[in-house]
Structures are given as structure tokens and as C-alpha cells.
Length: 191
Image 1 (cartoon, rainbow, N blue to C red):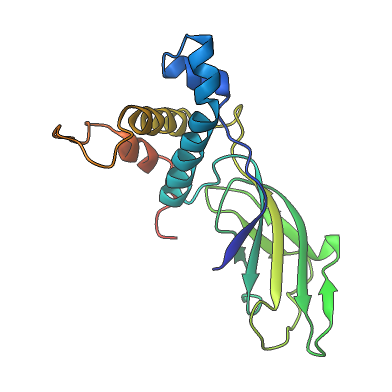
Image 2 (image 1 turned 90 degrees about the vertical axis):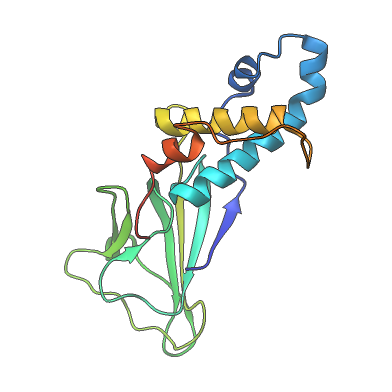
């Protein structure tokens, strides 16, 4: 399911939290490293989001489909906080916007879906690519980020900070209960 980011993601870790975890207490050095730390945190969030299929950081996404499903419309990244809009191309080729009462958000469990509103069904669409576009707000914030994901992000951030070369003469091994193991506790399996 093709999904694109409409609004830049807000990182779920604060710069102070990252600096503290990396034990960067020299103010001059910290200021020089801020952009690099933020970029590495973004990379850690990308990895965690890809692995878990959970939205890491508040963001607005758009999902494009060729038609509506029979019933529930799975949203690729949870937690979904709101459905912004559902638009579709009708049989005549005109872009329509679904009314607010014609759909609802099912946010029970880890896999959230858009579903038709009570007493309604999804409309008929024109047979074409991207005939349906769903915009939705999603993502863990600093306050809602699960501890396992927070710990994994900090482990990955530390690894990227301490091993910032393409090659090493050291034998690098994954640590037991490392980042992937922590992320697996929050992963949406089978999606």
C-alpha cells in the first residue's frame, strides 16, 4: 500500500534526552553535534518505524489505493490519532470527499482501520490508480512512546554515534536484547 508523508515527522525524543543518553556534557561540543544527533535520531526512527509498522513520531500520512476494500481499510502505520480526510475519484472521474459521518476510525488494537460509518458502505470508484486517498494523523509522541521503542531508539542512536565509520577493525556483534528484540515487542506482525 503506497503511503507518503505529508508533514515532516516530529521526533519522539527531545534533544536534551538524546544529549543526556549520549553523555555529552560539554556545551561547545554539544552545539556542534546537534544537527548530527537529530539526523541520527531520524535514522533510528526510520528503522524502528519500518521494523514495527508503528508510526514513530507525530506525522501526517496519505495512503493511496486503487479502490475501497469490502469493509475495513487498514491504515499501514498506527497509532492513528485522527482521520483527516478520505477522497476518491467517482465513476464519472470527479474527485469527491467523503462526509464526516460516512466513515469512522477503529483504533482498537495495534492495527487501526478506517471503516464505513454506521449504515453506510464505501462508494464506488473509477477504475484507476490512486482512486482513493486517505489522509490521517498518526504517531507516538514523547509522552506516548512505549518504553521498549524509546530504549531501542536510544540504543540505535548510541550505536550510530559511537560507530560512525563505514568500516571497523573491531568485531561488532549484536548485543543480547538489542534494539530489534525491543522493537519486536511493539511490532505489528503479519502486515
